[in-house]
Length: 229
Image 1 (tube, rainbow, N blue to C red):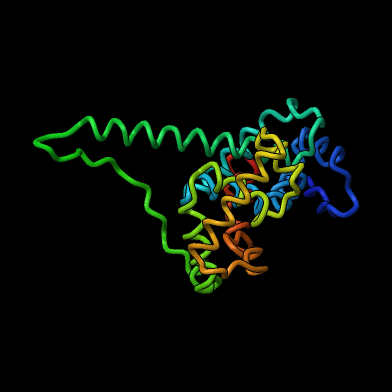
Image 2: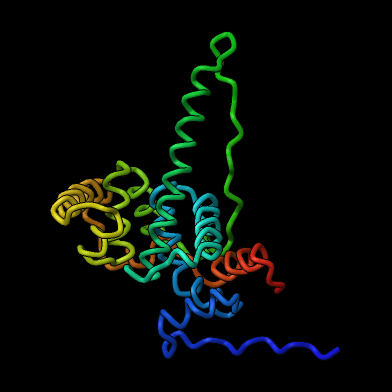
């Protein structure tokens, strides 16, 4: 029985968004891969900025893709595909954050002889690639970002680390542009205080999500979608 050839790889520079979505709706494996390669870093950074945990951020991005790819008919093109995916990832991350807080609240109530009953926590596996890639300043940036209050942290990640415009950030987070400006100003002040004026272009490399990590997440989603690797 002759084998069916794999569809040709997609060059994102020459394929429009509408065509890419159309191919994905027809379950073109390369369309799924291309969409993920184009959006992995942005979605990871946004999720990481909310949940403050590398492993959980990857889980958020996987679930966001699965939700999006199984409901592609819901994408109407009113916003860009990247914005649509980002909103799904943010909602997934915020949902996990709410669950985490509820679990913490329950843990505080369930005590025995004054001792809190421990709840299992997800521990991040060692990531040699991350250890090798990160310099000390980037680790300081990540810690300082994690310490920001949530309402400032998400704006800071979107505007400074991900590089979204003021208009894009406001649209993505459902905020007024003036609110984005105010929160970003406050976030910068807190970061400067934490890092002693060490903010700079190096932020563009914070929370890396490329190479094997990017490929691993893409492969995991493709497997869950039923595409053999």
